[in-house]
Length: 395
Image 1: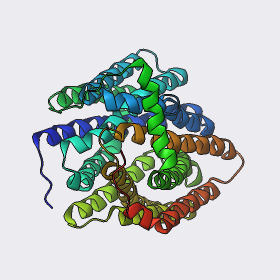
Image 2: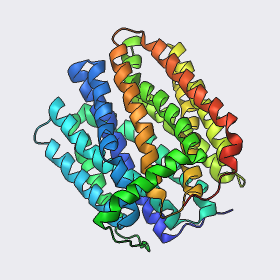
Image 3: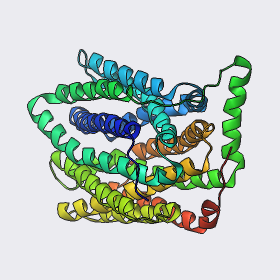
Image 4: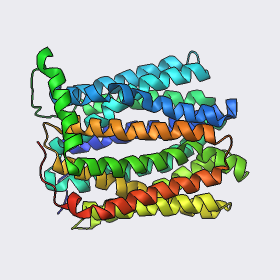
């Protein structure tokens, strides 16, 4: 079925693409900056942990707010706040201020990400959600290819400040564009006596429903594996392979190319099975991670990250689409954020543990462990395929 590109969805795509490009430019630059300044795997691991701390603290409440408040206003507010926060970083940049900024950005990112996931069913038809997610993935992959190139150029010409300024401007512009979207929100008054009841209702779904519990296990294992490798890839390519810092950007660009190719395949395919999409995506991620762990040749590792890109597109698209299709619109914010709370907790815990172990264990062995965890996620998804395929709308 051809995806109907409405004006609302087009504005949504443009807003997401602009903020995503700014994010990739900033993330590449800030990770390289931190490692150049400190040379510490523990600092890098801590940076990723600080990104997820807000998720652990605020997620149980964010979902209820998203379901009950104006989603468009949430996205506008978080984008403006993210832009202003980055501007303040220009006046005093240090490891401490980067970590503080990361906490604030993490809160906004969590609100923004969860709201974006819950707003998609309101800007596209239910039977077009998977293809809509694929288009978002293609545009995101394009920013993954372009972002590292811009980040490398800015680091060599304007230091870290250029990346910070571009990301701040991208958020502010994204907020302006999202204001053009027209959404018919379901307005429900938040009362003190029922707010926590609504929070409990969302949590009850994730603990009682077999479909959601399986998603948590699959997604949780995926993020554990991805979290481990994402924290240390810059160290692997520079210290273990002896490559320049720019090679980190090459791998990110290769992953982006893989995401673009697989997302185009999803869009062109008329009959996409979201469960198979998830299973194959996890398998590709495991293969790519294992090749990275065992190779020292930059060409082979770039090819591995192309494969990782295939999985980094198909697995998350499959998981998100399964949730968006099977969760009712008035519950999706709570369920999404509650699920993310659990899987992000697992990811944060794994990063914490392996940030310490990285000082004692060969990093290649850690990547093998990560690949094994991702393979396990794929096998579990295959074993519960029937449960994922036959689920009904959860309200």
